[in-house]
Amino acid sequence: MGKIAVIGAGKWGQALHFALSQKQECFITSRTKKDIRNFVDLEFALNCEYLVIAIPTQEIKNWLKENFIFKEQKILVASKGIEATTGEFLNEIYSSFVPNENIGFISGPSFAAEVIKGLPCALVINSTSKKIYEEFSKFFPTFIKPYYSSDVIGAEIAGAYKNVLAIASGICEGLNLGKNAQASLIARGLVEMQRFGKNFGAKKSSFLGLSGAGDLFLTANSTMSRNFRVGLGLATNKKLNTILDELGEVAEGVKTADAIFKLSKEYKIYTPIANEVKLILDGKNPQDSLKDLLKN
Ligand SMILES: NC(=O)C1=CN([C@@H]2O[C@H](COP(=O)(O)OP(=O)(O)OC[C@H]3O[C@@H](n4cnc5c(N)ncnc54)[C@H](O)[C@@H]3O)[C@@H](O)[C@H]2O)C=CC1
Ligand SMILES: O=C(CO)COP(=O)(O)O
Image 1 (cartoon, rainbow, N blue to C red):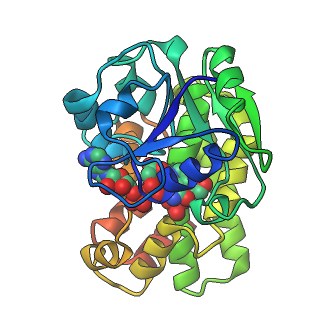
Image 2: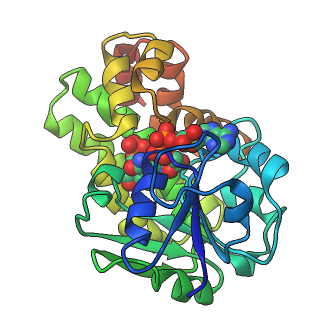
């Protein structure tokens, strides 16, 4: 196994660094120096053969333009989201910098706070190249079970969409609408993300497995989710800026809601739940959204 480094030392980057340090040395870097074992500068990290990139989706294109130098590294993308300004998927953004056979995308239910404690979970490495799965899975610790899928777009859409649905579920909980409503919302959300994904060539099975149902059930049912907590805040009429300031970490669903709204309009895809989340984020009263969802 060659050298491996994690780029981005937020919650997920640090949890992955912990996990990938179990079998061999793993390096980590971020834009500000952090007191973490094996912290290195970016130049050192870019010279490693394997890179795991955990930078928020909305920042990634600029980061790649300004910092990335392709040196035949194999890359595992750990972010979940869709670029809001362009509606571009992560695999489209990365394709300008890294060839397909060198890149994979991680998906599945994985709260960083549990991974960093060494609690067990199952994840998917999605890549058009099975070799990427085989090489990266060798680094995984015994408490993570890695699966392989070639459905990159399915995993990406599932991982991005569930964040928007977690906001919706947080709103539902914050409004005290009950467990029936929440289960209905999550189940219809799963159908909705599958419909959206189908438009872009995603496989149905990705939505029923770890990347879709697995991550959706996790995130839409727990206050451990940042996106769910955004929803809770919106239900109490807190201003979005205040919610995000208090959160202090990225909640990808906020910008991904804009991206889905834009793409579903462009491709004429029926996405009622994601649309209402976007409208609530823009100031619509959640009770009015509820009425509209029940009516349509
Ligand atoms: N926290 C979790 O449980 C999981 C997070 N993810 C995904 O991983 C990605 C990162 O999430 P977290 O680490 O949890 O977020 P975080 O908010 O804890 O950390 C984000 C990190 O990105 C860095 N960053 C922000 N803008 C940057 C820029 N322009 N250039 C370089 N670095 C920049 C920040 O300094 C910070 O270290 C997100 O897409 C998230 O959806 C995926 C699975 C689990
Ligand atoms: O993607 C995640 C777990 O799989 C983390 O979700 P949040 O970003 O909502 O905390």
